[in-house]
Image (cartoon, rainbow, N blue to C red; front, side, top):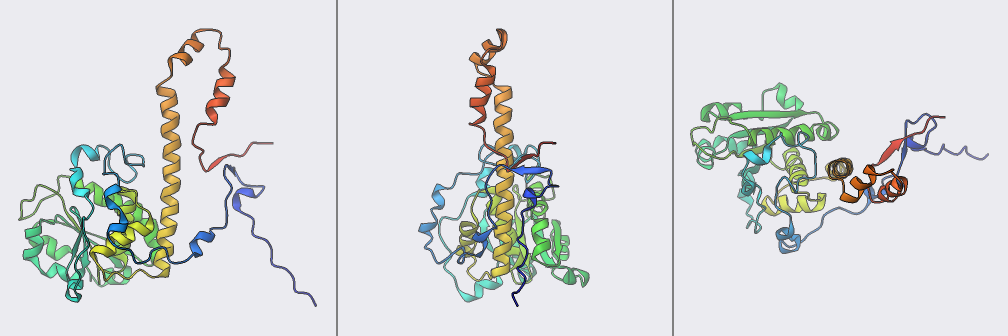
Length: 310
C-alpha cells in the first residue's frame, strides 16, 4: 500500500489570502544548514583595517531604530575602533573581562567583584544578560556593584535563544542610549561612557549580544563578528542553536537595510530633482512616463509589494 505523500509547504506570500507579493525569488533558507559559519583564521585574515569607521554616513539603519536621534553628535567615533591585534590568551583570563571595543567589554559575572578595576577602567553601565530563572533568584546582577560605584546597572532577562533574538534590537538601542546619555560617570569621573556586558560565564548569551552589536554598528557579517569577539575572548562557547539565532538576526537586519536603502533612494528622488526634471514639469509634462519607467529600474527593490485587488 503506497504511503500518502506529505503536503508541499507553500510560502505565505504565495497563498491566495496573502496581502503582499514577493519582488524577489526566495528559497527555504538552506544556507542556515550549511557548514559552520566560522573557522580558524588568523587575525590578519579578518581584514579589520578595511571596515568602514562608525559614522552617520556609514550607519545603514534609520535613526531611532538602533541609535537615538543625534547619536553621532554626542558620541566619539573613536569609541568604536576595532582591535588591532588578537589577545595572547591564557586560561586564567576566562575569569576577567576583555575589551572588544573601547566602549564595550565582555566578561563573566564574577569579574564584578573587582570594584577597583571597574572604577579604574571607568565603566558606566553594567549590563547583565541572564536566564529568567536566575533573575527570579536575584542572581547574575550588577546592581550591588553599580550602587557601590555610583554607576548604572541593567539586565536583559530571557528564557531561551528564541526570546533573546526578539530583544536584540532593544538591547542594542539600550547600550547606545546609555552611550549618548548624561548618566552618572561614577567615582572614576570618566568623560566617556563604557559598557560591560556579562552573563554567568561570559561565554554564552552575553557573547551573542556583543556579536549582534558589532553586526549592527560596524556592518559586520556573523562570521566576521564572531571571529572578532573570539580573537579577544578565546573561551567563548557558541553552539549550533546560538549560531542559527545569529544567522536569523542577520537576515532580519539585512531586510531592515534593504527597507532603509529604498526609503533613502525614494527620499533623494523627491527632495533633489534634477534640472531637467524641473524643466519638464514647467512644460507640458511630455516624456514623464518614459522617465519614470526608466528610473524605476534604478531603484532598490523592497522585499515585498502590495498585492493588487481583484
